[in-house]
Length: 186
Image 1 (cartoon, rainbow, N blue to C red):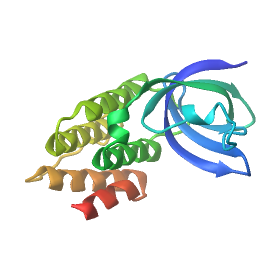
Image 2 (tube, rainbow, N blue to C red; image 1 turned 135 degrees about the vertical axis):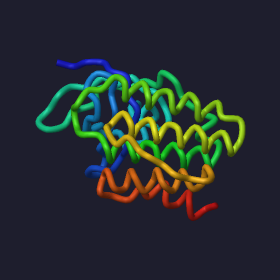
Image 3 (cartoon, one colour; image 1 turned 90 degrees about the horizontal axis):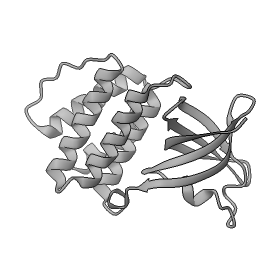
Image 4 (tube, rainbow, N blue to C red; image 1 turned 180 degrees about the horizontal axis):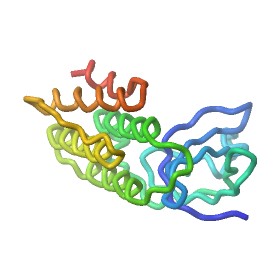
C-alpha cells in the first residue's frame, strides 16, 4: 500500500552502487528511513526531487524496516537558501538538529510546521543578522517543543547560537557538525 506525504529530506547516504538511503521528516509519519532505488543513476527521474531545502511530496511504500520511495515531486523549492552559503549552513544545522533529536516514526505535525516555518523564514531573511535570528528562534522553538525548555543567558546572537548548539549536543548526545563549522567560520 503506497501513500503520499509531504516531507523534508534530513539526510542522504549512498547505499550500494545506485541506491540512495534517505532520512526524511514527513507530515503524517514523522521521521522515516527510506530507500530510493536507482536514484544515483544519471537517468533517474527520482533524484532531482530528493534535494535538501525543498518541500517534497513523496510516494512511499512500507517495506521491511525501511520505506521504499516510488516517486517524488518538489512542492516548494527554497532557491534563495541554496544560493547563499550562510543560509545553507543554517539550514543544514537545523536539519541535522531535527534528525538528531527526533525518534523514527513518531508523527508530530506541529514539528513539521516548525520545520516548514523555518525554511519559509530563512528563505525570506534579508540580511545576515536576520538569518541568525531566524535560526536561533527556530532552534529554540525546536528544543522547547521537544521538552528541552532552554534557559539561556547570552549577550549576543552569536553567543546564543553557540549556547543553543551546546543544548542540542547535550540533548542528542552528538555534536552538530554543521553548526560547529558555522561558529568556526565567524
